[in-house]
Image (cartoon, rainbow, N blue to C red; front, side):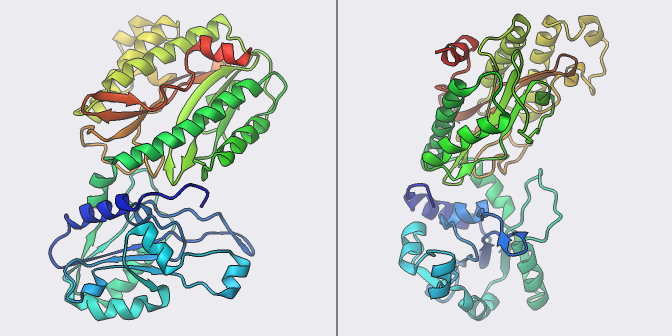
Length: 429
């Protein structure tokens, strides 16, 4: 791993909080992510299952966590199973965790090799009444691939049909959304790296550069600062490309007079930032571009004030929609008389602002959380309004990451340039 070691207290506390919510006489099993084939003889770069990392800090494939607090054998109350390395693996794939290293990273004392899992599980599973299985219940996920936890569940259910199977996701949805001090620190580190990459590209952008050259500058800065890499596929969308919300081709020339919409961020120690900015290719906004930019910035700042403990998700987005509607009327994009007659279920602002304003942020960029639970202290949410005008070939989005605390919210990206004058000043320095 490129990132610096993390104090294992965070993982010990996470397991303790999870265990406190289990039913009596319960056993929970968590698997690392699958390795996915990239071509005939290669896998994609491994990315750890966020729930597994949340509970262990282990960033390695073919690993299993077993938790059984009421186990009659104390040796198996908390067990981590790892892939046993050998000389061949060391030569061809590199270093893998030793048992001592895994103890230090995770805070788990009892470490076994993976080939011992089936035997150990069989000796204790019949002393449990409930078996908690980890399933991906992020409501943005479309289940089309039978991932490792699901395959294991099918095997267990066939072999042990009379146990009561439970869902770990119900517990983790409540736990993961409230960030600890260490998680906030790791997220802020990802934000800081993102800031440095943004300032770097502001000094690099000029007419004639390509979107992929800008992406290369960002990638260089991320890796140079120990980031795991990109939190998501970066969007470098110049001109009309900014109208495509998830544009990732990044293969066009940036032309004089256009605006580039950036949506990129660093991942550090599996925790993600998420940032959007829009900048003029030639270093100066036109009046129209500036008017649109300032309108989006006003919406972003107004929406940020609404991100506090107790805020209800749907009410928040409805209020942001009303704020955005006023700005669109001011820009001449909507008519106030048409707005007065609009169908409330199909508000007119969605023609120019068609996505949500916020989502939770953490180990997943769109983090695992309930959209029906009020915002809480310790939540981190994005705030990312945008205006997209196809007929003008102009798209503007501004996005920062907001932490909710007892004293209000904290903008984790407050030190990233956002004022139009500041952006122009850096680009022309």
